[in-house]
Length: 236
Image (tube, rainbow, N blue to C red):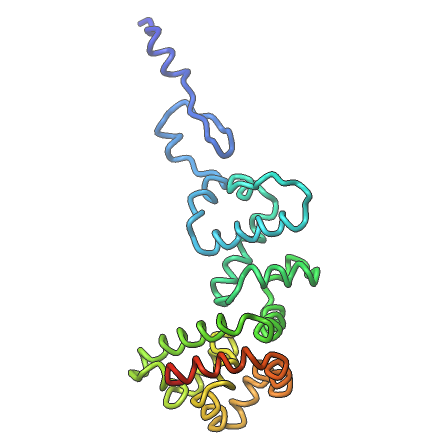
């Protein structure tokens, strides 16, 4: 039986993958096709992938003279995709408080991208960053953290430092979620520090270094007064 012209054209019709350019005769086979680039595209909305892509853009902006805007397609086909996505997933897992600032730090220190997922590198950055960030950003983040903790503790947010679980609070300090701005410039914060045992003090000491923070507060007296007034007004 002779095949019709339409049948022949149908068999010769090919479906092409936009990601790897592979062609398929059957639509059903094409629909099942999942190359690595397509897989990466389908995962584009995952938190780690979004952070990885934004970091990829930041990296190229700082390291190339080209003004051409990179696209997500550029990202998924980049040889750096796996490294940046791994970094993005690390940022999600570690709950990094300011990814662009951390990325700037890594680039400035010329740290190999293979070591961007290091807890030590993030800790070094965090201790430095806490001392230079905008105090109102620090207080806003700290108050939100107290609000989150208050739900489990079943107390008012302003009372978390007074009556909350000290070990949980110490952990939040080591992750940068509760800033020395709140601890040193509020009544409840100072009371909290006075109640800590030796082990708890040792745990958070690098993050609240009294001597270094005293210098920070002395250098910016106006900021100190503004923060102290704000915290007093909201009951901390």
